[in-house]
Structure formats: C-alpha cells, structure tokens
Amino acid sequence: MKTLLRQRVLVNLLMVLGIVVWMILGVVANGVMAQTTAQAPPAAGAPAAAPAPPPKIDTGDTAWVLVSTALVLAMTAPGLALFYGGMVREKNALGTIMQSFIVLCLISVQWVLWGYSLAFGPDHGHIIGGLEWFGLKDVKIDAASDYAPTIPHQAYMIFQMMFAVITPALITGAFAERMKFSSFLVFIILWATFIYDPLAHWVWGQGGWLGTSKDQLGALDFAGGTVVHISSGVSGLACAFVLGRRLGYGKETMAPHNLPMTVLGASMLWFGWFGFDAGSAVSAGALATSAFVVTNTATAAAALAWMVAEWLYRGKPTVLGAASGAVAGLVAITPASGFVGPLSSIVIGAGAGVFCYLAVIVKSRLGYDDSLDAFGIHGIGGTWGALATGLFATKLINPAGADGLFFGNPGQLGIQAIAVGVSWVFAFVGTIVLLKIVDWTMGLRVSDEDERIGLDLSQHEERAYSKG
Image (cartoon, rainbow, N blue to C red; front, side, top):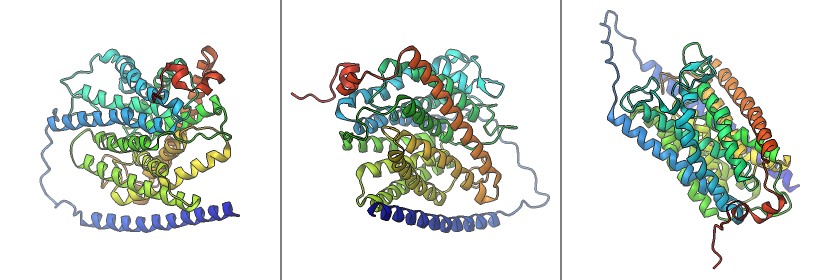
C-alpha cells in the first residue's frame, strides 16, 4: 500500500512537472515573439556591409580554450575518480580511482597517435577520418584549422582530447568492482578506437554524416550528448549485461563507502563542466557566456528536481541523490548548451532530475547491475538532453544552429531522434562485440575469490586506507 502511494505521488510529481514545462514554454514563446518583432528589416537601398576580414589566431580565444581544456581534464581526474571512488565499497576504492586515472594516460597517447586523426581527420565516406594526421602530422601549433579558425590547431586537438578521455572513463561506473585490470586496458583502447572515434567523426568531424555540415543530417550536439553521454551510458548498459551482476548483488549491502568523497567529486565535475560546455564555443564571447549560464542553471534545477522526487518517493532526501541529480543535469544540458536560453535550461534540468531518478528506480526492479548508474544518468540523461535540444533550440541563441520544435521547426526533433537512435544502436552493439572479443581472448571478470577480496588487493596489491 505504501509503495502504491509513493508511485501515485511520483506520478503527480510528473504531472506537475509537465504543467511547469508548458508554463515556461509559454514564457519562452512570448519572449521569442517579442525579440522577433523587435528585429526591424534593413532599410531599402542600404549599402551592403563590407566583407568580414579573414579570421586569425586570437590570444583571448586561445587562452579560453586552453583553460577549458584544463577544466575538462579535472572532470576525469580528480572529478570522476572521486565521484565513482566514493560510491564503491572500501575494498574497491583504489581500483576504481585507478581506472579513471589510467584512462587519462591511455587516451592521451592514443589520441595523439591515431585517435584525433580518425575522429577529425580528412573524411572518408562520411564514416571515419583517415590516418593522414597520424602522430599529429600536419596538426600545427601556429596555424588554425577549419574547426576553430581563431585558435591553433593543436589547441583544438588537445581540447577534444579531454572529451575522448572522459567518455570511456564514464563507462567504468557500470562494471565497477568486477573487471580484470588487464582486460580493462584492452577494452578501453578498442572502445575508444572503434566506438568513440567514428561516432565523434559522424557528429563533429567535417563530412561526418550526422553533423551540421552541408548535405549532412543536421543533428545538433554542442558538447557531447550523443558522442559522450549516450555512447558511454549505453555502452555501460551493455557492460552490465555481459559481465553480469556482482557477487551478492541484491543480497549484500553495497552502500557507498565514502559519500563526502563522492560529493567532492560531483562538485569537481560541476566546476569542470563549464570548460566542457562553455569551452565548446571555442572562443571567448557571447556564445561561451550563454553556455556557461545555462549549464549552471540546468544543473541546479536537476539537483533540486531529483531531491524533491526522492523526497516524495522515499520519504527523505539524500546527499547522494542531490549529487547524482546535479550530474544528471550537467549531462542533459550538454548537447543543448550552445542552443538554448536560461528558461529552457530549467526545463531540461528538471526533466533530467526526474527522468534519471526514475531510471535508477527501474534498474533495481529489472535486476541488472549498473553499479554506479552510468546508464541511468548518462544514457537516459544524454537521451533526454539530445531530444530536448530538438525541442528548445533557437537561432536567437546560436545563429549557426537551428530552431527546435517550440520555435517553429518540428523537423529538428525528428533529426535529433535519428541521431539518438543511431548512437544507441552503434554503441550498444559495438560494445557487446568488443566485450565478447576481450572475454574470448583474455576473460573479462576477476575470479570469485578476487572479487570477494576486492580489486585493490587482487589487482593492485594495495589498500586505500591503512588500518595501522
């Protein structure tokens, strides 16, 4: 009876959220109409504007992108390392932190050698970049690229590297506490090469078939809703299915061993995410400012929405729930951050808080073991964010983007849905294939005895905490 009451309360909450969404949409629509009306047409016979001078490397833009690169690096280590490390049991704390740290090392080398060339190099059949830029050949430090004409090409390369770093690191939350470290290393290299790099080319690479270049599909993804969050979250779900549940799952207590560490990690993620989203403008200006504002607003709205939903459903709000809600909001606003305004970001954030919380509840009922809710937060949050971009995007924020459904272009929502579906299928199927290959050649899981001992001792012969 009590459970039924909680379910009804949650349904009512969703109804209230829907009403709020439509109220905000009305306000947004009125604002758009006012702005559109205020834009007077050019006077007849007015002389044509002089052509803009060719772009050149700008020190301010370069400084902002380099700072943003450092911010995104901090999202992985220490941000994600602490966030995930605090949520596992004490015997797996070091092993979990090590996974995030070593991904930073692995992908930093892979990206320089061939990853960047595959993702952003000269297009081959709208599917993949070539190896023409292997080892950063022709990726110069003193010349701009077509991707970012006001910063050095290597500045753009190193910024994109940090996206390639954090994406596979996010997957580790799904198989925490049970994968062999040697198999983990091989899987990460394979996944980055065969899943992340092609998907990044499809969406962001010049000529990639999902992107916004001429004659391409036109999917909007400002900072990684499909490329980063859907790919990592759905791949995490595949990992949870293939590896199976942890020993004692559903029978033993598997509570986080250090929640202050997790909250510190979530706070570092929030801090670094400004580089993730605002840095994706690849210039220091109005668009970066807008992305900064909506990122913070959506994150706060999502943390509050998750807290309220959990409070109504469980009877008490939790610190872990608030931190998880904040991360869900960061995830959802990522694809939309360069295309939506502040009011829309509140709706996107609130939706992320509720939808991702529901995904976590459903997980426990379906019985799969996504250890740290990589799919529930990144898979669901990224999907909602990508679709919401098709609802709320407006050229008033970014003329280089497109209008969404609520701004007169219903077709954009369909384009976003196609990009979401393609990303889901490609990441899920591709990850299962890679996992099966690694399992067949090396084995994926630690032994039962090693799992009971914990990854810290069985894989690294270390303890996170000295007992004296």
